[in-house]
Image 1 (cartoon, helix red, strand yellow):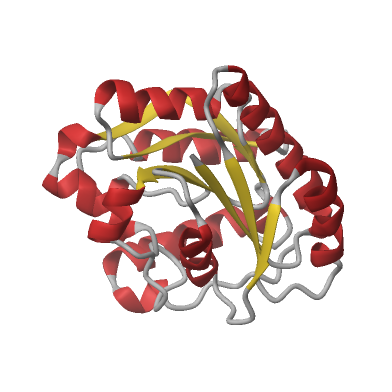
Image 2 (cartoon, one colour):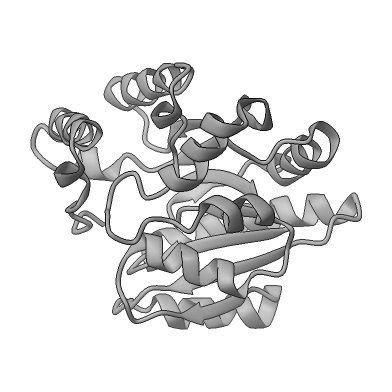
Amino acid sequence: MSVIIPARNEARWLTSTLNSAIAAADQAAAELIATEIIVVDNGSTDGTWDLLQQFTIRDDIRAVRLADLGAARARNHGRRHARGRILVFVDADTHLPSDGLIRILDWCDGWGKEAGITRLSGLERGWRAWCWWTFWEHVRRLPLPYAKAMPALMFCTAGAFDEFGPFNEEVAIGEEWPILASVYRHRPRRFVYDRSITGLTSSRRMERQSFGYVRTFLKYVWAILHKTGRIHYTDQIR
C-alpha cells in the first residue's frame, strides 16, 4: 500500500499530517500490511524539503521533488514512484485516522472495492466549519458520479488508476473526477463512500478570507457547471 502526499509550502502543516500517516502505517504494520509513505515536494520555498529530510532519516519516508506546479501533477508524480497495489492520496493538511489504512485494505481485498472516499471533518472548531463539512458529507451521498469526489483523502487500486487516470492536470478543481467518477459510473458496486472513516482536514481557505465559505461554495458550483470554473483555484491561503 502506498500513501501519497503532495506538498507545496506546507511546512506549517506537514509535521502533524506525517505523524498521523506514520501512526496509521504503524498500525497497519502490526497487521502485517506493508506500507510506504511518499511525499512529493511540489516546488516549495518555505523549508518543506528540509523538514522532509528529518522524516526520511527517522521514519523512512520517501521524499521526491517535482518542479512543475500543480496538485494533480504532484499526485501523478507520486503514483509513478509508488510500488503499492493500493494508492491512498492524502492532502498535506489532512490527518489520516489511525485505523484508516487497515479499513481501506479491507475494502479493497475483502470487499473488492476499486476506489473510494471517506468522511471529512474540520481541524478548526466552530459552527461554520461544522456546517461546511456536514453539508459536503451529505452531498457526497448523492447517486451522481461527480458527487463522489474528494482528493483530500481518497484511495484507489493501482489497476483502477492506470485504467481511468491519471489526475487531470489541466484543472485545479475536480482533478480526481477521471478516477473516482469513472469507477462510480462504470462499476458503482466497486466504489465505496465510507463515512465511518473520518479524516481531519483544514478549513483555512474558507476561514482566512472574507466571506470565504460563500466564495468557495460559489466557486465549486461554477466548477460543476462549467469547465472554466475548474481551471483556476488560488493556493495563496496557507
